[in-house]
Image 1 (cartoon, rainbow, N blue to C red):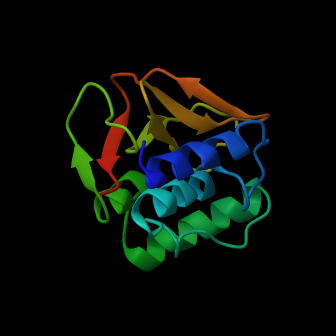
Image 2: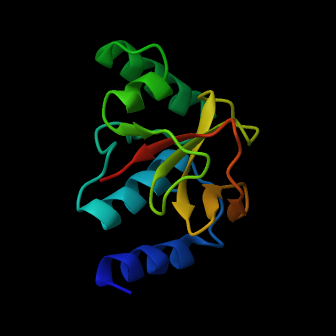
Length: 141
């Protein structure tokens, strides 16, 4: 296993039991940090803001969409990353799933492909779920 892959798995393990916290361990910060480990830079460094609850995150999100001229977070991500057409996400890819948690700030939750599962931030810890036909995948490379 190469150093980057080991650092990625070390990161996943370090946050495995960490609960969801707006602005420090939410789906955007989690996947952006994973991307930084895998590629040397975050895909959404300028999207991570100083929000601390669902209301401030929603205001931040809507402001970003307006500033960048996108309708939704999926379109904005398409503007930064290459979408992957596949039935399963390759290791280390960004995954968007129609909302899987109660905090409905965006229409999707972001996760990252880890082996045959996708890691998502849930209320109490990471959850590892199988990819579904509704998921959208992007390459972080």
